[in-house]
Image (cartoon, rainbow, N blue to C red; front, side):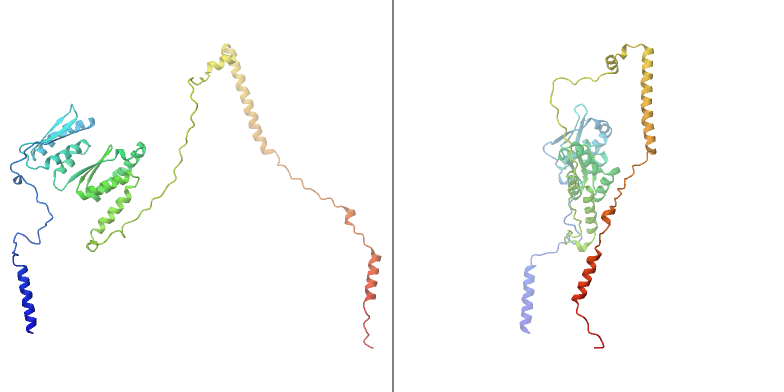
Length: 360
């Protein structure tokens, strides 16, 4: 009994030594999310930036009208972060730069993304979302992924889908705004969603239909709701698609003709033909008579052919000749020697032994 008490007392001393320097932390409790990033405010950097940074980007001619209308809103939005911006319509460029008052060092990177998105036909309302902390953008270049121009257009249209249905489904699953314009795909949203969008876009350009990836994303979204599958592999739930090699039509190769420096012979015109036959020099009345004769001959020929086809119905079919076998009467007759048969029967009777009678 005393041994047990001493062991317990030793354990208590060991525990107390372990937690000797541990004190209660009233500012730390289970309700705090340690992974949450604290927002960066003006108080965190009251002195501003030392040097000026600037970014510029070009925009296409068709965006000039829209940018002129929206530029006042862009200025007022960037002014909240103490960033100056300028629009050069002659050169066709947009510039953003920091000032002495700029307190957020990463704001200039977000402002650069805003003008990039505006140049890629993204509306101002969506482009300004990039200035938020938990939202970023990704501009995916797809122009040089496919060599053939027609094939590229087909695959890009496949990404959009009928009436933009495929693109809308992708936006709902990834929580991103997606804009397909020219040779780029612009996406705005959270980091995880952008990663998914990039994968779908790249697979589409590699001739993998976006519907397959959308199906996988839908299944993953449903599996994420189940807490029991948190630490398990989801491979058994995801579909596995097999690639099929479809036979394509072989392109017809045209045989190249031998090169000749001389142009091809001109086709004869109607006047040339009349000159060759001498019809050109006939009088109008003679021409009219000749034309009538030609027409009448043509009609006669047509009537003959028509009559021939009509008469074909009245022609009786050919009858097959039945070959009659000639019966040879002489060969049918059989010569029978009656005397020889009689002699044979007599011989047979003599050779047989006589049976004894019943009385004997």
